[in-house]
Image 1 (spheres, rainbow, N blue to C red):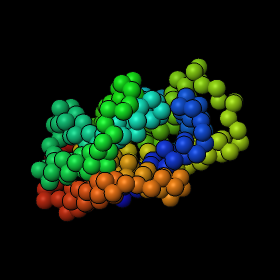
Image 2 (cartoon, rainbow, N blue to C red):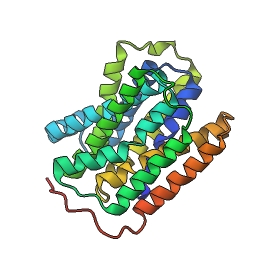
Image 3 (cartoon, helix red, strand yellow):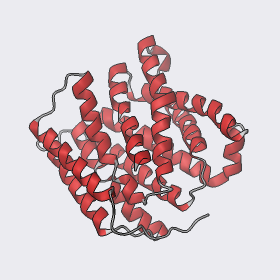
Image 4 (cartoon, rainbow, N blue to C red):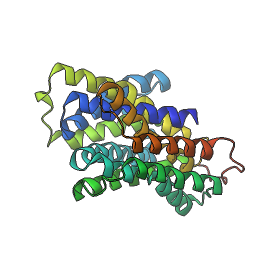
Length: 282
């Protein structure tokens, strides 16, 4: 629970940092991916004694598949935030635990407890409360990118549950490299100023990788649905950061919705009555 919750809190800083940097979607994606890959180039040899590329080759297809999904999650999310309203993106993100639960059941037969399903419904209600009155203001392209981001995220949760020995640092590093390569053509990364680069460097090399590795590691101890259940808390935290650092005062509906989400998450993950069904291990 600490890995999943703490990881999502760290990831919630992405939106604030990107907003403060003033970078475009593709520029942000390029530098976030680049700094993440560089950080893992240093960390992976320290931990494993192997280079990032060598460790990726050793992991073979599962590492590559997970890295592609990691890159898709980051890239699609950044695009969604810039192409549709935050409200629309938030509603789609609220569906993350549902996607994760259904995908995990279909792919690996992992059952979800009734308690978790109740928490999923409650968290979705909370998010809808937050964005009440803002639905429909975004563009369809951004909405579709948000759906793609959640599908990548849910699929990766299932893959991590199926193969718990996947090296999370390697996945995050290769995923960052793929993100940077994809964003390189449409991006104009050299146009950013020093302040923007410093902000993106902090996000890409510190908070972002730490959060993603933590969330990935949480799947060793919680079901995919339970880890996905923490996704809406990222939204609540991001609203809090905007309140503190951008002077964006949340509405009463936002405060009520945020409280519902917090209660739902606590209900879903604290002292569940039954354990998740066993998952086949590789």
